[in-house]
Figure 1 (spheres, helix red, strand yellow):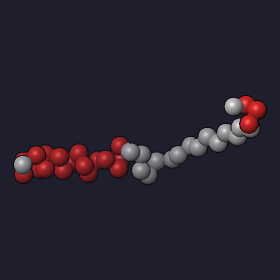
Figure 2: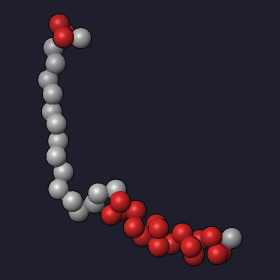
Figure 3: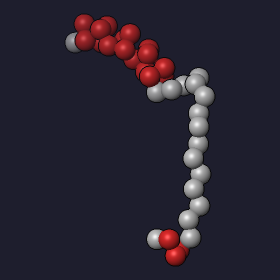
Length: 37
């Protein structure tokens, strides 16, 4: 069990980078009215 955690530690350390932390973000805002539904 300890070896599993020691092998997973480098992967867990890279998760924020894989999730896009500290990278520019782009947002798309779309408006819609009742007639378009």
